[in-house]
Image 1 (cartoon, helix red, strand yellow):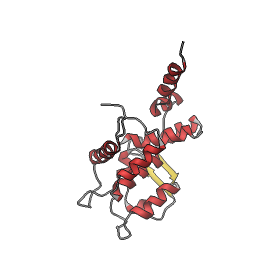
Image 2 (cartoon, rainbow, N blue to C red):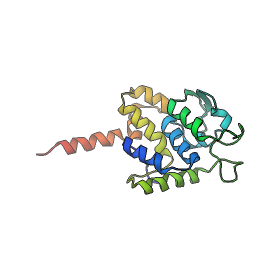
Image 3 (tube, rainbow, N blue to C red):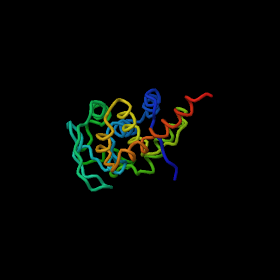
Image 4 (cartoon, helix red, strand yellow):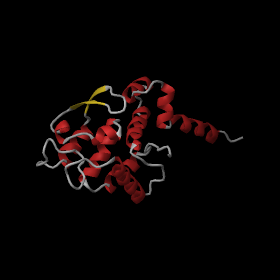
Amino acid sequence: MNTVEPIRSKADIARMKKALGNPRDKLLFIFGINSALRISDILALTVGDVRGKDTLAIKETKTRKSKRFKLNPAIQKAIRELVPDDADDNAPLFPSRRGTKAISRVQAWRILNDAAKRVGLDIEIGTHTLRKTMAYHAYKSGVDISLLMNVLNHSSQRETLRYIGVTQEQVNGVFESINL
């Protein structure tokens, strides 16, 4: 299994949003890069979990820990604009073609990879790219690593830095800066 990377460029994020023309797929991307939730938790959401709400409370599938957080303006705007007004509150937020179930994690992976290919993104992409992208940009914008560690439910700062790829980026920077 390949290790996926965050999308480091905001221009690439904008290109991905454009490439995801289907409202459901665009919402999946926006929700993922703004929530730091794992794909299993994202795909389990219903319309009623988020419609008209400014916070989300869930029990994480992997850790079984309760998590409560504010839905940021990007998520709230995407929900208002991309969730059909007539969608039932009990319906999956990311419905499959049949509409009674959510898309699978494999389908989410396909959606993201197809969009990345269309925009020429040359990194390993997967569903975890969404979570890593949020964490990477939070760190780069000055969020304290110990707070980010808490957001991601990691046990160490080292794990968080490795997770978002900052450690390797810093090592590469050392080699790039030396020109003897």
